[in-house]
Image (cartoon, rainbow, N blue to C red; front, top):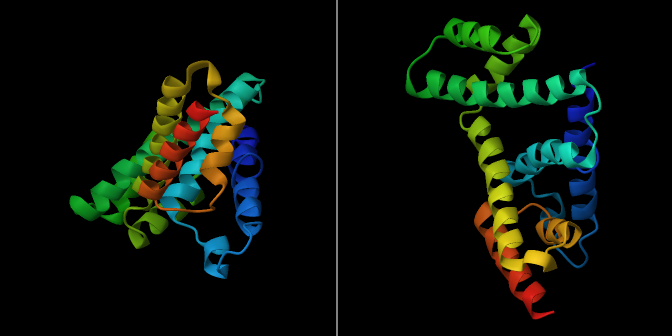
Length: 183
């Protein structure tokens, strides 16, 4: 239960539910554009949404904070496991042992996580690269716009085109900054 707030933010609002709902509303776009899901963008938004919960005041108890931090630890350990398996020839058991020793996951969850990363190289990196890019772009927008920065319009600029590659997102935010400065 301690992970419930972080999970709700990631999967619900402002996370995937909001993100995917807005993508489905894109007018006059080919169907694939409303359903395109580049993992770095999509899961990056999910991780970004979890951290937004801090400023939103969603983590009210020490257990809630522990849940968010345990998710962050899990994501960090996924990066180690992914590299261990695919670059350093770790066995499945080595990966299981590492994740079990360094996270609050149950042994069942450890097993499913390891199988996921054996079968899907680089997914852990996509999650984290997406999140880091979103925070970087937000910092750039805040610095460039100063008092004109509005978190709501920034989020609109991020989500307005649905799922996009991170380089396309960078260009969207450059346009957002230019237009915001002009207004």
